[in-house]
Length: 208
Image 1 (cartoon, helix red, strand yellow):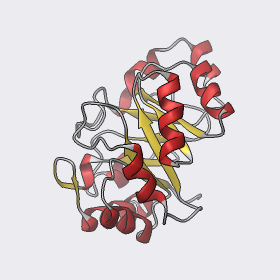
Image 2: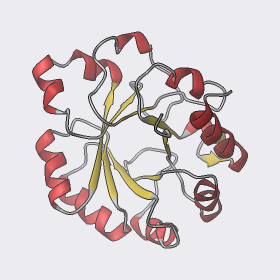
Image 3: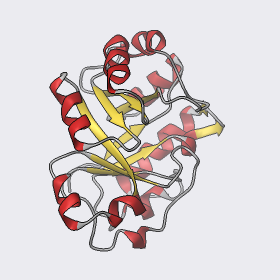
Image 4: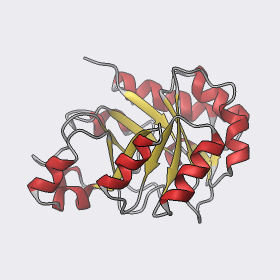
């Protein structure tokens, strides 16, 4: 079985970036969407990603922000990947790719499965993330809504994942891996190196 992909999101400090890299995270996420306790600015992120190995994706996360702002901020931050976590269209995703970035398009799981089959099929070639309704709130979603409507290709499971439940929730989901933010925090917006370590190991081994 291919090793599960793990993204640690909502990072803000050099020590937690280093911890995530040291524990083998595949991707590091930085929040640019306004209103989050984890929001950072482009200058801070440029400093944080400077020492990140090229093998680790650095992901700027946006939500319903103007495309010009997304591209300008991602370029200033020096990231490799842009995650669109709102109502952005497939055309928006393609525009970001044309600007030289890899992409992730996040959906609330229920919203994705409610799409007509033709619309779900249109996203088949894109890397996706399925989340709970309110991203970063530490809430899981009912996996039964996925049924036979899981995305084709690469997709990440998110929403309320913790070191204690990620193995079980990934098992049988068909997901390529997991994305976590609040589940590796000691308090809201404050990451914990031990929880990052435990989460990555649990996601990869399936153990709690």
